[in-house]
Image 1 (cartoon, rainbow, N blue to C red):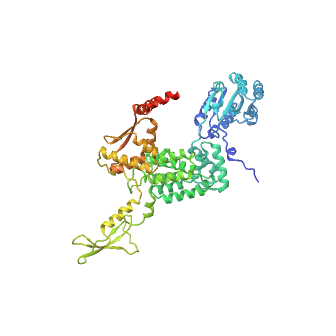
Image 2 (spheres, helix red, strand yellow; image 1 turned 90 degrees about the horizontal axis):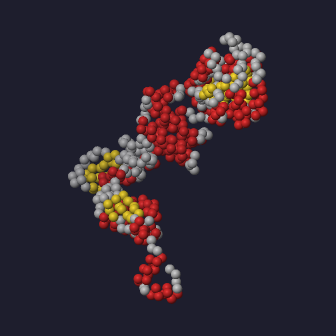
Image 3 (cartoon, rainbow, N blue to C red; image 1 turned 180 degrees about the vertical axis):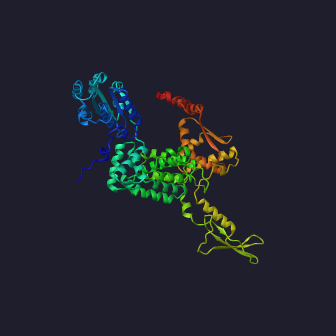
Length: 570
């Protein structure tokens, strides 16, 4: 059995031309070598798996090459020294390094020291390394590599020429994976490679490791389905189908699909995060100039463009806001599944215009789905039969004429007088329809609520009436607070004054039920409540002990005699 070499090692770049996604840095290093402008201390920093150590090795090998076609790796390898600072981070290790630096190379012009994970050096090791790094011998070049530049002390950074390696773009990673798949004779779908590149999150080494794992799972035929199954990522189809259900207001089917997603082992947080990204991608597709921001395969891009035509910008912006809000609340929620289900129901209700709604948190009521599929009340044209006729009535709720197998209800109406003779009257049909509408439990807009005029006396009567209700319910403290001041009507607002902030807070807490009752009594839903604190009134109620004694003495002068007789203190 032949020894297997992972793709990250097998296809490791040997020249700067093979390095993926770092053209700016590789061109700079090539020009520096050609023009003899190479600094003696270089710092390569950036995320993991983007080519820092690879570029350091290529640079170290190229420094001593005199001719383009000469590759004396075996000889020049003696001039390249690699030090892992993660395991050699003490002062003694750095002192040994500085002792070796003084010895000139036996072959070639330079000795190159590559120190990987340099941020792991201790503070003492950094200090011991400072002098050597500032004034190294002419035959020595240091190449430092790290993923965490912020952990390196500033005095080291100031002595190095810094190269910031960027994350590998999804397109570059996908193209390189496609090249490797062709080299290995693997038939790979474009979307499958794209998912691998996205999962790698800008690290080429991670992308190659994932590629090896998926190939081991699916063989020489790499499909999108195999990749999503192996990597445990939600397929694009899940979000396309869910978005279609949202646009069609199919809440029951949407909740069932979410349940299926959870049953496959996916986390709800991952599901809602993917939804936010999906809505973002749909928003990007609505403008030709921003389509290039969509990082998906060509087949998936066509699906995004098709679905983006079904939704408008307003819907997508609201959907993104709801999904992001759900994401922020997810970790703090005690019932995370319910949080996502509420979010999904709100998403499916954004563009619902079957009934009036004025709440941003509006959700299509369940009664809508119970009645869906049954046509509304249908009255067939009457046929004249002497003095009266029979009208057939079907109790349904959609806009289609649906024939029901049950026997229709009938009503006989006198066409000459218009009065009901027998059976079911048209007025009862209308009341039945109104009752069905009330069962929909849809919120009413403020403009449709009554706003009849009223007097201050009527308002005060309603106020006193509510005080009586509060006392009957056992809320005596609240009732006594409401009696402290007589409410006054200022334009369309009720003004009340209380002696302290405590009374104001207590009334504010229970004002919803209070104003609900008063508005209903006055048939005016635009009236408001304004609560004030009057400091003078507070002083009036804040009696001292002496004030109370003087008040009692006014009512009964013998109180003073009692105090003197027993020598009482006030």
